[in-house]
Length: 68
Image 1 (cartoon, rainbow, N blue to C red):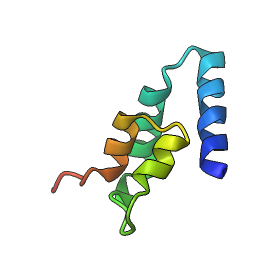
Image 2: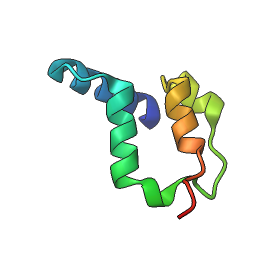
Image 3: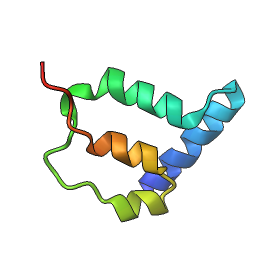
Image 4: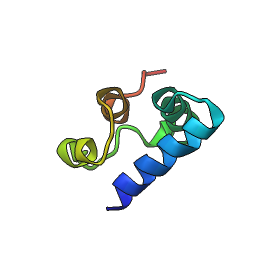
């Protein structure tokens, strides 16, 4: 599916640039999507894990942002 395709594309993109994929993913999520986490909808952990998401990436998507 589309999540697996994106995960593979991201890993290849990072490999071509010598970037660690999990660290890059965390940076992108924090910069671009911090105000959208956690999502109001349940995260499909099993589906995303099957698509190649790592535990740290799933934890980041499930994390509650710190209170100001």
